[in-house]
Every structure is written in structure tokens, then in C-alpha cells.
Image (tube, rainbow, N blue to C red; front, side):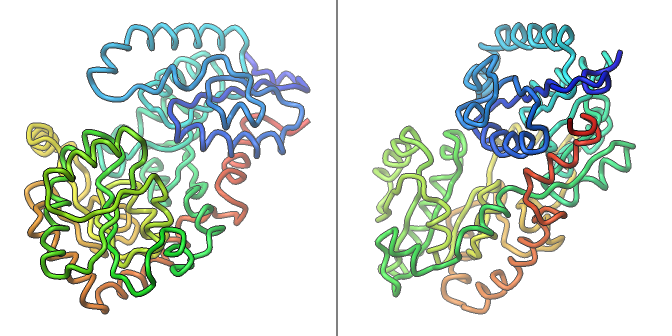
Length: 395
């Protein structure tokens, strides 16, 4: 059956489904670009405040999908499955010109698969990390989405090996740092840090489970460094009030002088001489802020045993700067190597041997360039253009 756009409708229905706060951020920017391309289109689906501000007709709020943690997911699973069944029925009845799943693969890929089987056009925006976990998922994702829009340039070639149409559209963080002056002095003034101070940023993750696993080792490393240099300033950004409370409780058990700030991670990374970070998006932010870094990470021993024993892990590098660079650009200390002693030793090299920090800083601009949208017009506009032929010509 033809889609609305193929029938020549002048007001195509474009549905967007985001499942968490980061998806709402991506969706808001994408909606702005889509509305510029199809000013008469109707946009509906699941989103948050940013997507509603761009004109989304919100069938469900993003909070209904924002569930984290295994126990919480299991508790809410019947409700989520019911919500998805109702959404599928609605979309099969209304037959939108295009449905765009924004990240949230556990929810969106199942939705997209049903719609694609029914002859509806689907796009998945933000590829799961197939370069790290089970590359064969690429073929399965191809059964769900007519096109996958990727934030990293190494992802489309992986999909191509499985016959899946995937396009690199650029990373929104590259856009954000393009418009954020890299001014260390200004960043320090915002944080009330003296220009002459030696500053270490600690970013042990944005989830409570990550903090529980990593913060003790990170604080141990900071304690060892301050024993060597009691003038070293240590600052930890807290992404939420509950995370701040958890950090404060941990600090009570460690003789470390550290200051907690609310959010402002980008500013802190621009101000810092070096950073100790959990593996994840924060490492990309540090590279874009030109902040030398050491990366540490640890998962539960049983989980680590399972993923290594079953061969689920596809990469020998874990941090995004190293994966993008294709070499060991920044130190990675994972699992049993993620100890206070080893983290402190790697950080000391960056803090007290200028050549080591300079080598990282000199390599970061190339990573920034690699993440910019290929058309030079920003990730959201490029993403909108990358799906234009699926919707049909603009009315």
C-alpha cells in the first residue's frame, strides 16, 4: 500500500519517536530542520519539551518511555509493550509518510520492524554501537529500517557489509563545539578557577551504577595525586541532584578535597588541565574541548565474563577518541586495570609532562573535523536531507 506522500498528499504525516532526554534533544533539532524542508507537514509521535516546542503533536510524553535499569525495565515492560502495540495499531491505521525512530533501539527497532513489514517507510536515527557489540546486529537493524542515520563515520561501512542503507550525517556535539569558543581563560572565570591553578576534572559517569563502580577508584587516584601536589584542584560535575548526593556521600569516605559543581561539564573540560572520565560520550566531549584525558571503566565481573567468554565484544579499543583515531591516542584502563594507582600514574604523565598532554591536544582537531556533517550544514539539517527521498518531494 502506498504511503501518504506517494499518494500525493500535500500534508504528509511524519512521525517521530524519541525515548529519552538525549533523544528529545536530537529530535528537537531534527524537527526544526524537517519543518524547514516540509513546512506543510504534520509532525506527531512521542517526544519531550524540545520536540513539542518545535511543533510535535505529542501522542505520548517521552517520560513514558524513559526507563533505566534492569529491574525498572522489567517492572514497566508490560506497560511499554502495551504502549508500543497501541502505537503500531495507530500508525498502521494512519499510514504516515515516514516514521523516524530516534535512538531507544529496544523500543524503536521493534516498532520499525512491524511498520516496515506493513510497507511503511522507516528511518532509525542514531545507530546502536555495532562497532563494539555484535556486528551481525547490522543486518537485523536493516530488517527494521529503510535507512539508518549514523553519528560516526566508521558506522556506514559496517552496515554496507550487510547490505543495509546507512548514511553518516555528522555528530551534534561537533556542531555544539563549533559554536562554543575554546577559551580556557573564560571557562575558568565562569568556574572561579585561577588561571595559574592546576585543575583535574573527574567525570565518573552520569548513571548511579557507573558512579558506584567507578567513583571509588577515581577518588583514590585523586587522593594519590593530591598527596604529590596539594595545590591540585579537583572538580566533579554532577548531572543531577541525585547524582550530586551520591557524590557527596562518597566524598565523605575519602580524604580528598574536591569541589562539586552542578552540570557545566563542557565548561569544566575546557578549563581543565586533564580529565579522568568514564568511557562514553564524555570522552568525545573532552576531545572536542581539547582536554587531555585518561579513560577508566569497569563493569560487573559477571557481565564482563559473559561478554568476553561469548565473544560479544567486537573491539579492542573502548573510548570514542581511540576508536575514531584508529590508534591508542588516550590511555584506557579497563576492568582490573582501573585502579587508583594506575589511573593516578597515567594522569601524572598528562599533568606534569607537557609533551604528553600536547600530543593529545594536537590530535583532537582531526577528530572534530571527522565528526562534522559531510554537507557542512550541521547534523540535523544533513539528517533531514538524508531522508528526503523517502518522504518524497517537498510540497
